[in-house]
Image (cartoon, rainbow, N blue to C red; front, side, top):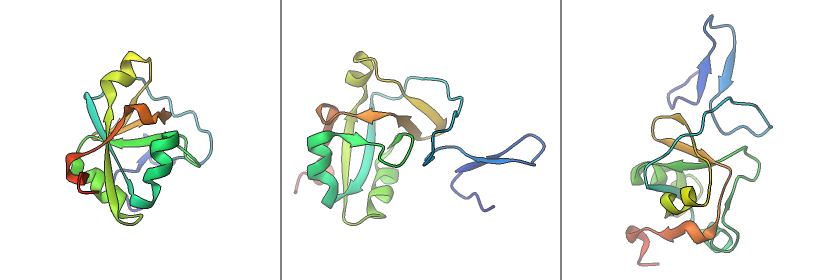
Amino acid sequence: VENDKGRYELSYDKTLIRALYGHSVQVDLDYRPCNPPEILYHGTAMRNIDSIMEVGIVSKNRQYVHLSEDLDTAMSVGARHGFPIILQVDVKAMLEDACIFFNPKKGIWLTEYVSSKYLSKTSIDESD
């Protein structure tokens, strides 16, 4: 299995493989909660922004919402779905409200839901 983005891991004896994140079925991933940086980013397509600003970021058919530590990764993710827009997530406020985060891989953060009250457009998108 090609694993250039670190999406999978092999068991110790290399007989089993599992996805690290993005499951479309409920899976016990045994992730441990941890504290992320104060700011994370979410890349999406411009066509999704109205819905996101109304209802927040929901996992839809995935187990978790995916967030990025850096703008470049968020931009790359958003560009896969159309013209990209990057949202900044106020992690500090989420932690104050007892939201839980997981870090399955360096630079990638997972959480169950991000309310729109924690979101703002990044400065690179202020021309919108």
